[in-house]
Amino acid sequence: MNPQQEPAPAPSAGPPPVQERGRRRRAHLLAAAVGLLAEGGFAAVTHRNVARRARLPLAATTYYFASRDQLLAEAFAQLVEAELATTRDWVARHGLRALPEQVAAADRARQLGLWELYVHAGRDPALQRIARRWTDGCVRLVADALTLPETDPRARLVYTTLSALWLEHVVEQRPLADARALLDAAVENALRPA
Amino acid sequence: MNPQQEPAPAPSAGPPPVQERGRRRRAHLLAAAVGLLAEGGFAAVTHRNVARRARLPLAATTYYFASRDQLLAEAFAQLVEAELATTRDWVARHGLRALPEQVAAADRARQLGLWELYVHAGRDPALQRIARRWTDGCVRLVADALTLPETDPRARLVYTTLSALWLEHVVEQRPLADARALLDAAVENALRPA
DNA sequence: TAAATAGTGGTACAGGTGTCCTAGTTTAGC
DNA sequence: GCTAAACTAGGACACCTGTACCACTATTTA
Image (tube, rainbow over all chains, first blue to last red; front, side, top):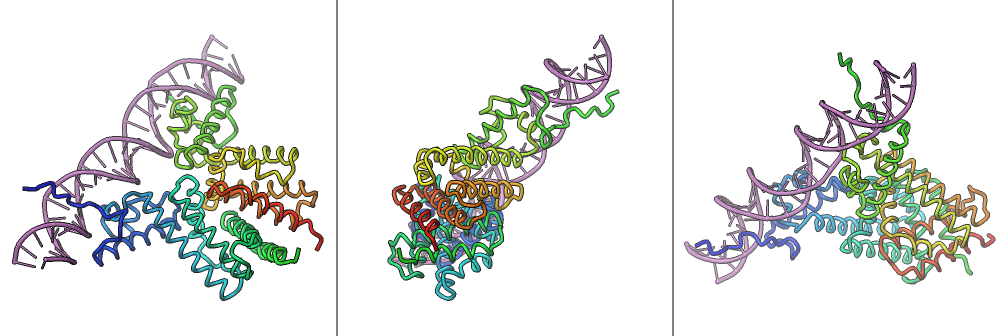
């Protein structure tokens, strides 16, 4: 009896849990991780914190995620996707030049968490892929907003200014007033005929 | 009698140690912290790692620095100062447009550590001051290289492109070829008469 | 010289960490 | 129904963390 029954093979890295409740729990854990990342940064995302916030037992975290790194990676991916969607929406509604206002309105801590993970991606190939997708998504977004082809270097150029201003604002909390002016200048430069 | 002899008031946060050996030891600890930060990032800078690398007893770290945070802050300041000096040198020698080559040649892990601390500064006012000094220093550097007044927004604009490309390269490890082209375009745009 | 200060280093503490284990319970498929 | 898989939950393990303590020894100062 008890023929090495393989009690819990841990689906972690593989496909999502098959049972409905399992899928919900996994999603809750992920959401908790994202929240913690925003509030306390990188270091706050521990198994115990995540479990506590999701009101689940500690073991649930290791059951649904193979490791803390994987949890972080998925949180990063989710954060990036959400951010891209939000930004796309905003740009569609208010135009590219209104982006500084969106940055101002958004949750600063959340943005910080995003950038923290972005930089951390420099040391983790799994995260690096997500970081690239983020940059690419943003560049495409800018290109669309300026009605430029996706690969037009001018879009890329505008995005460099945009992202630098964004990061600067989030980290250094400088007044946003000149950010808007600088972004305008960058857009103007890009669209000005050579 | 032992009249509350205050055995070790810990100069940590105050002025540097008065004895020569003490000053050397403190410097060694700081250098060790910078090295660790580069190699393993944020998390690697622990009291024990720093002490081991500096070949000093664990207690030396708490004797010379009031806390881990202070140690990190000083490491950040030192890293920033060194980086600014190096870059200034490079620009004086090879010009602004050759900066991508400097980034390529520099120690990637070290740059990563620098950016990690930069983003972390968003959560720590003490680090934030240093982050601002870094940005300001870089902008001034760009302004000087372009023979623009320090506060000219065009210098700031060029720096946004520069820093974004720099961070992108360090984190995402994209080919550096188009970075150079983009930087050139940014400089051209800035200097083009309106 | 003696006293006061600066620095040293070994150790201990209380707490947090990721991860694993295991016995149990629920659910899905037949 | 029954069996196998999916899931739960609590606890434990080994390790690492920042920091405090304290009996020392150098060094400086008076």
